[in-house]
Image 1 (cartoon, rainbow, N blue to C red):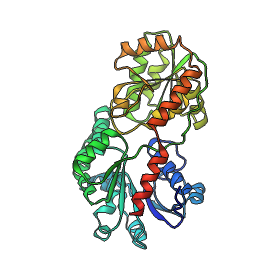
Image 2: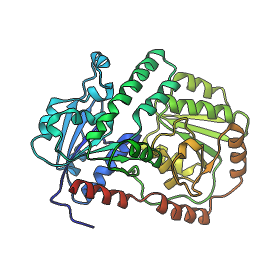
Image 3: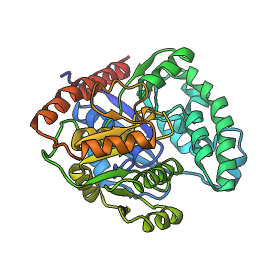
Image 4: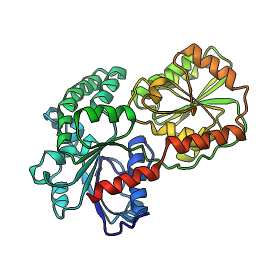
Length: 375
């Protein structure tokens, strides 16, 4: 490995990326960790709006700066997307202009930097966590609250227009093959860089158990809609389903209470969720949004036994036999009935290990990042 101890990099994060306990910040945190381990001196800039400052981040980074995210209602009427204008910060710009180190912007959220003329000669790389306007369009479709749905629809239009600022980036890092193809048609110097996560080695418990697990942040409409779909699916089979996630809405809580073979685990801590994934006989992951690479899919493939997904969960990914793909309720019921009779044995674990080496190579991703920041 090359020594990069003389290399400095600014990373601008949309949120404080530790603890790494939800999708976006998991990718950010483990990228920081990987680059730090390769000797890069990271100057981290975090927007804060509810999460605490982190001594651990300060131990990984050369410097850490925090900026209050401006969440005033008036920001909703800005011509820029709310997720962008609420992070357009003069203090951040001043700090980034103190040197000429390369800059990595985490998400379109942080791309207000690209609108400032002072940065037009800088090496600025953008991590595209999603095709944001498509992501927000799906959120709007799933949202039941009329005010939230209106806000999301307004963001779709603003995000679609604002995305063209990416022409000013030196490079764009797409998270999946689908996203790579989209960005490559519109922008130059696009690279596919997989999502970073906590796990790099397959560690699965041989054997079986008596339950199927679905997990996700249940305060997000996409996830609680998927949970509702699965509750309806499992009503008709005699197999236990556990649904685990943060802040489930009350209507989902009530729905689960009325179904004998479905159990809700409300806001489990990290260790509890990890144990649930490891001990489930089947992990089931379904989505209506074919966006990015879902980090919960990686978590499941490294640590869980059988994995059932729908095609949108793995769209644009070469899953190479890692998952069973099921796209309707009858197919789910049939696959669950069949897999519950099978043991996840040493042969299955070794097969998973070999396939994951082809599917997920974080060293290769970090090598690419190092080349980009050296340019």
